[in-house]
Length: 364
Image (cartoon, rainbow, N blue to C red; front, side, top):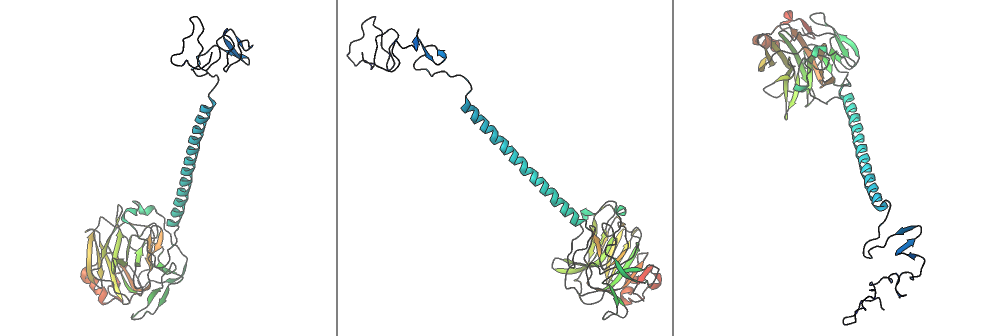
């Protein structure tokens, strides 16, 4: 009998004759047939079971998949590869974050070291103090004198002597009747007192004649303080595209305030700058050549440690905005002078009100 299905119209098997399955070997006990599978008399076929090696399997549905035993190594390999990829991604991500953290820490150390180095920037650079950067307890900051001094400047009035930076020179300045201090700019171009001259907790007046030969930019002629910040300063600032004279002060409780001149700052000519602080009235005023430029109300002026400075100012632990030119007639009064008094300083700069000053240099 053929192992192909019966053609249409072919006779059905005789009743009782075993039916041949399609495409598989003969059933046990049937005559030898052509097909696939071992002969009926093969030793591998006994009692309806096929023996493969040492393990036997019961008869199966020929259309069902052959059952397997043991783990699915392919599936396990896929799972392991996925886990390995996840681990690699986590390691790479963690390494990247670690590198960024190390780089950020190094950059922060470099920036911190630069901002607190205490060295003055090159001439012409002008980092500025901001209102939010002022410490609440300025008196706790130790003063720093910075570069070494060479020589000294004796006082005209009082006993306070100023130490001179190595590039500062007392000379006969052009268009000036008396001597002046020449400040060519740079970190060694300054004069300073060892201790504060102005008591910023009380009323005071500070005045200075200046001659600038720098065409533009921020320049400070007089200031006080050598710690973290200044207490106040007089000088020139570039506001927008125009140079203006400016009086700036740190305020008690934090922050700063300033008063600008009404007109542009004159270059290459002598100008008298005067700061007046009236403590009872809480008022700070700027005068230029004896004329009031403006005033501002303040709660008080912060007292930072350190002496009077000529030709530089302390800002964020650095010496900045060096003066380029000459200064003379530096005078300090322990009181707020009246407008008429201030006007007389500009009219007679050499010796005006000299008898009432607490300290003076290159004046008279």
